[in-house]
Amino acid sequence: MATPATTPPRRQTPLINAGLGAGALLLGLLVIGTADTSTAAALKVLPVVDARGLAAQEAGATVLVEGRVATGQPALDAGLVVLQRQHAVGATKPGSNEIRFTWEPLPAAQQTGVPPALVIESGTGAVTLVNQDFVWRDPPRVASQPTMVVSGSTRVAGFAAGDAITVRATVVDAAQARLRAIEVFGGTHANYLRSVTGSARVPWVIGGGFALLGAALLISAFFGWRTTRL
Image (cartoon, rainbow, N blue to C red; front, side):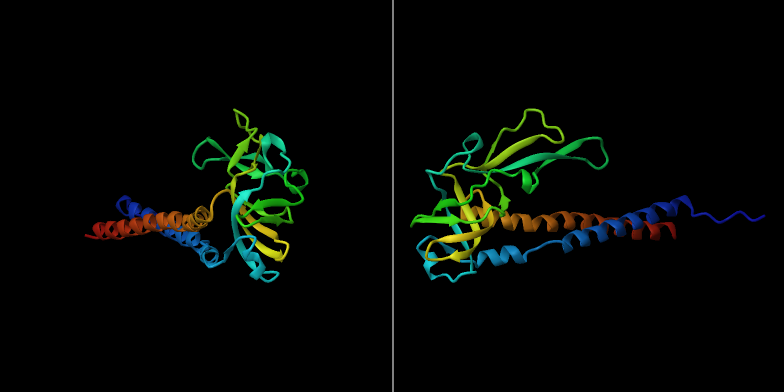
């Protein structure tokens, strides 16, 4: 009875490298495909206005406002005027037993740290945010974080009076300087743009790394295969 043909050991390594390379290249292209550069580009052309400049904006227009959290607003937990309650979510690091924690916002029903109307001092007057359902980006302060973090641990993050803040929002009432916030950022307008641009680059960096690894493995597989045929 004939013995089934098997791949010689010398040719197994190029085949393995080819399979791994193709997988890594495909993964890299998929990650790069998730990159969103349009948001960062759109933010760069949005008008940056203050309370006085809002008068020239129509209702529904999207604007950026840079300023500081106004004083005189009641402080909540840890002296924060506006805060988000967060909890630790654990995930096992691939290839190990190490658990890494990320801080995610608690469900909306458990959020009690956003005042009905947050007031921002824009330099030429006060601007008021009329909603509570905005996206948070890099709040400047963290409080009540436990020394030992486990899954389910909680903390608060947010802004105190006087903290720098940049808001992306739509105009509700230009005359009264009232805005509906889309996203709030803990820092200046320039820092906000750098943060958004940096986030947009992450998929390119990670995806590019996988793609380069895949290409290197495919090249190695090609030359390895040629060597086995000599």
